[in-house]
Amino acid sequence: MHPERTGHPSEPEGCLTAAIRIPVRIVVLVLVVPLRLGWDVLVLCGAFLRRMFRPVGRALAWFGDAVLAPVGRAVARVAEWVATACWWLVATLFKTVFYWPWLGLWRYVIVPVAVHGIAAPAAWLHRTLLAPLGRGLARGTAWAYARLLAPLGRGTGLVLRAVLVWPWTALWRYAVVPVATGVYRWVLTPLGHGLTRLARGTGRGLALLGRGVGLLLRVLVLAPLVFLYRWVLTPVGRVLAVVGRELADALVVAWRVAGYVTRAVGRALKRLARNLIGRPAAWFYRSVCTPVGHLVRDAVWRPARKAAVEAGRAVSAALASARASVAAARRDAWRALFGGLREPEPVPGIPGRARNLGGAASRQTVPGVAAESEISPHQGG
Image (tube, rainbow, N blue to C red; front, side):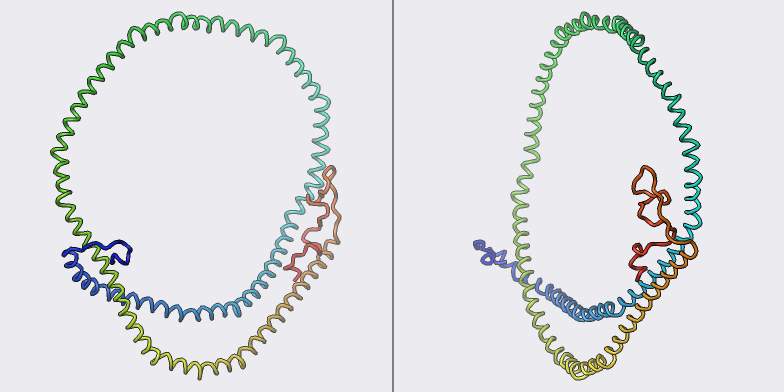
């Protein structure tokens, strides 16, 4: 890349740069032109495929929205109605076989037996026997702790302190501490001073030894490495830098030239394809396909679509009427078999709860029959 294009001040170029530039650019141009041609061909193929498959995708999306979506919604409604009917039948059978017998057993057998046979005797036993006995035991325990256990504990604590704590405290204060102080002052302190002097002498010797080893390494290792870097590696690196810079500039120039070549070839091929394929195809589309498409749309597609819409509306109305008839017949059959609705029985002490179902008092208690306000929108059509 030229210095005047990058904004850097121009530098004088040597003969080596001029000798390397021309052959490198020739070789790179020969190698890059086929690659640029292949790249432009791939880009053109991608654009062609995108333009070709986009109408196909739009047609498939329209088919899904106009044909498959209504069919799917109709199938979903029928499946939902069948699933609702099956679920109501299973729930009714389950409640009739399992729920209501256990509810009657709990309400009329277990609850009366528990209230009158267990709770009342237990309350009488607690009130007449257990409560007075507990109060007497609490008073006796408090008197025993205040009059007997507390004085005995204080005396035992004084005895243990006099036997175990005080002798060891005196031994530590008048024997162990003075002996440790003398050992530190007259033994450990002189020994520490001697070790410090020994360490200082050893450190000075090691420092002198390190200086000698460093000087030896400087003379035997560092000086040859500096000579190799200064007089061998630096010139070789400069030559490689010049070659790399010229190679990069050659790649840029070759890529531009290859772009010009591929652009000219592409224009020629585009004109040839337009004259051989594009114009005949456009004439065929305008003169043949468009009139045929309008005829099919006006004579076949619109009447068929209108008939399909009317048929779908008739099927939806028939399904809604059938669902309403089945729901009414189900409610009438339940009333004929088990009677009308039954009012809930409130639970004493718990407002808003029903004894028969355990829910709110306003909820319905007849199994398997829902009130008019509780029928789901799917069941009511």
